[in-house]
Length: 325
Ligand code: ATP
Ligand code: MG
Image 1 (tube, rainbow, N blue to C red):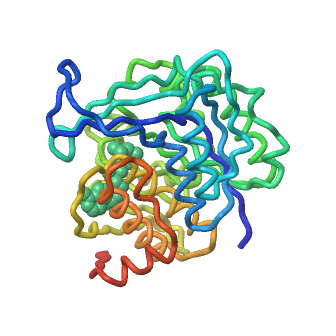
Image 2 (tube, rainbow, N blue to C red):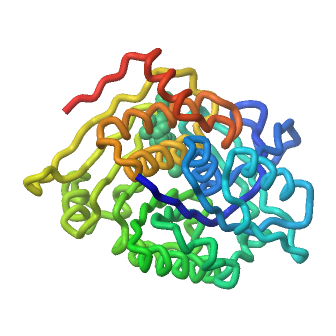
């Protein structure tokens, strides 16, 4: 099946604290720069699988920007939609882990080059044969970017395309009001929804609502596939069968030595969306996505764990997988 994916948003370099519990207010060692940005990781993973993907972003005229573009090109991402700005430097992020499930970030995104991404940067020519748009909630950090995203969404929808949406909320971003306001808009167009477990309650109609109820309501609204990502606990899938009845599947995660889970959700999403568009059945797409997330978590650096289809197949082969109904 022929398809082309588009995504857009933050492209930045990340510096990773060398020690667990390393503080940001004390001098310490960091490793990096690593190319990063949730939609950039998503694009890298789609390209590594061998599928066409256009990525829109902005970098500064600096070595960090050059490094990011070079890396995405090497992975096979179509980078013509990445503009280089004179007025701002490439975005950056610092991350420190407090145990494997909790981490703090310091982001420099809205005031960096990728914060300048706007309507005019979305080249309709690059989108003329795109039939899928992936939206990262973390990318909706300004009215400018939301405008750009709506332009891409309109073009992809007019091409008869589909939309996937990963809220990818970060506690450090909660005070960006534009971001929250745009979520309702995106949800109405979403075909594949990829929240984290911690984000589910954000989409509930009331605080006591169960996950199942929230998901059934979203499926009835027209979302076709939902995967709730649960880190080392795997993932839960919600969809509808041929009779239009809702059903769910639980997916155990693969057992790996997790060293850096940042980027795992982006790789999981990229693999699930790509393989669904490629015509894989839901269970097989989930199995590959699960492997993609696991391999991402097992490598240091947010984009360092992206995998080819052959690497995923080999990894799955070497593991015992289980899908429980
Ligand atoms: P983030 O908080 O970075 O946005 P996320 O919530 O989008 O992350 P996760 O749930 O952390 O995504 O990870 C996505 C998928 O990757 C999981 O559903 C699982 O399949 C796999 N994965 C993540 N962490 C691990 C782990 N420690 N061991 C095995 N698999 C993992
Ligand atoms: Mg995520």
